[in-house]
Length: 421
Image (cartoon, rainbow, N blue to C red; front, side, top):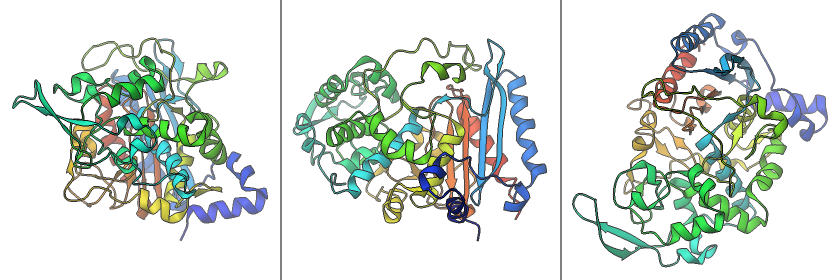
């Protein structure tokens, strides 16, 4: 069987060093050699260019790897439609919540070192969360009528699987939501890390810890836990422990000045609502683990391939059993699953640590296999890995509006229809 391991092992023999390997180009191969049809893959460009011509999106980059070989890497449309700048495959994108799985990996590295435990209480690292309370609301959920003590402490596992009760304010309309920052990027541009923790620790939870999957600030707080344990900024930690070892040369929490021209921009107005998109970028006051990273299609392909290859792409990032645990469904039958509220294309998925995990061959809206895993970004970016098919796909697009859900389903179907073995 072709595997990422085979491709990597051969490359190591040629390069003589896994560190050197990380900087090498992703091994390429013709589609036919890995059971994909070049003719069927050509349908992708036809479909995407039709969307661009209709003014529904500015452009995109798509990378597809199967059996460890890159079989498709194409750019479509414009990096900057207003300026007429064409898209290139090395374009940099704001990946939003695709930051979360990378931060989860960073935390699991600390678990492997014995410096962090999955069931550690959050209050061990930030005592201000020791006496957190849970809101009690009226029937219409418009008013907080009481607060009760949390039945148990928020744990690191709760942060990684979105069962902490520390929800995104922009993801609901209850009285509790109105007190919380809208999302990760807004929090990171409005507050320092200390201010952010002070704000959240003073607010009541929407849910008792461990009882409901509801999208929120778990990975942002995890990033700050990593900083507390490692003694260094989150970006520096991930650069040393994840991005550099994988050869992810364009991934970080800021776009350097000499790379800014490669940053992809959305359309000036949302094609559905007509509302302005984008706007001036504000500097981050802390590096938010929930949504503040930038990356490229090929950089993220390395990360996703590492997870599918059980923790290794050239360099060993995580142990095999750690990755298996990360990619296992962490939601028991007693946990209410509201994942579809965060992303309708992931409705009825389970959830591992930092990412969604498919538990059924049907029901969900996407083609794939039991065990495939993913987590997209609100800016329009998406990726998934399907271990059964040895398939890794990264879709980068600056489509932050509701159109992003259409493209998640559309690209998913276009990729799978090209498998012919």
